[in-house]
Image (cartoon, rainbow, N blue to C red):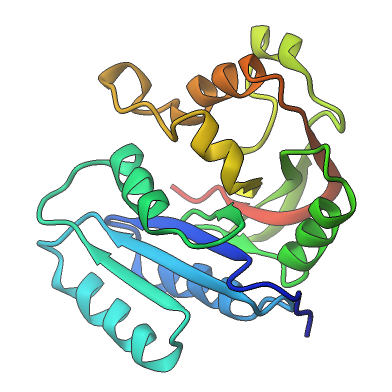
Length: 214
């Protein structure tokens, strides 16, 4: 199990809404089973009317003290939920996670190791492998060295795979809360990221499994 010598080095931020409970469990378990163990896991419940969410998160909080639960008073959407989690985050690095996906157990270890050894890089993402109830499928490829020119074609990083330095999130002021960015909060952020002169890297190893079930 990998540890590093400072405080809580990683804050994992995730919002849950109405995903099947089994999917949420698989997602949470994939984080708790990481080989890198020094993290806090901030989970924002954005569906307070769904009692099953409250019960599930309460059980996990009793099992693992690294879990921090935030209960929204009403449904505010993923963008605002992520910003709420960012305000609470104590980590040097911020890792994203989606409630219906799975992180490979070595994901955090490899991303932390990369950021520790590459101080010039402000974010590190990974490629993703698609999966559904029938098993694993193809890998979603993304450029190893993305630059601002990629914004003309699409996103330079797979959002849910990223681990970013907290100072970079602070510099870009988190996610923009607007109806214009409700489904593209990361795309909007990358414009500000590159405007700050930052750079990042994408590991060409699928350390994240993205669910394709509908």
